[in-house]
Image (tube, rainbow, N blue to C red; front, side, top):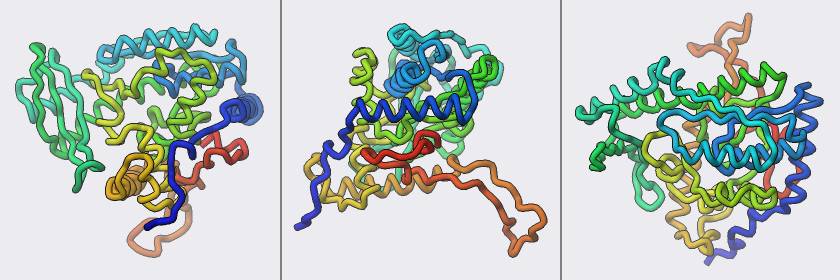
Length: 360
């Protein structure tokens, strides 16, 4: 029998007042001293991550130095816009609404995606709704399988397995949404001499749950060292409205309602947080028994964590530069790349770090 200490939700408990004060101090230093900007701009989605980021920036810089962008498009939830406005009003932040539908239409986001879907479901037309979902590789076994789920105007649900080509085509088209939103954030950042605040949490950064040069781009990321469970703890402390804290995490990217769990993580965020913490601290799978997970399920979660780190490593890399004047030693060119921390090497909770811990 294993004598390893039990891993429970207690390992993710923070002192929210201390954590908030440290992050706010870091934000002030980053924005005013290191980046020499007048304030911060961020995309406010109505989710808990962007709401906590907005609250921290408002407390650190003053509400008048924070701009929230609300960027709906024709397929996003109307709840996102309403909650975004609620959060901006609650913290006294100026909010600007930019409907990005026309930009997405001009880029061909919707027809490119629809064309890929019709290769699998010829009857699909713009009146249908859709999403893609991932099989539960933790509860089951084997390799992850992506499926397309479509809902007709009459409410009929159809599902089929995605081919590699259709999956890539759909995701490539949908990534326009994150990249257009980030383009808009940098427009306002340039306009006001502000820095762009990124909103991903540690789970998203570590596992590559972001779009390169989309929601993964930012000048600083205040909560990237916090597990999702810790973001919720900060949300309560900061007074983020209950409506936001009660809202289940969602991608809000596809026209059908889609949770982050079914799209990417396969586990609820609280269990995913524990598995990630345990993996980062080399805890044996048996140590998570108190969380209600079997050792086999935890092993499968560990394999999934490792696989996603490997598959999404390129998302964290800066542009790769060929070293000038250095002939290749083999058929592969020599590359020079900047030093960037591995996603699983972010500062652990409860261990105060220098400012760079908040600025990946």
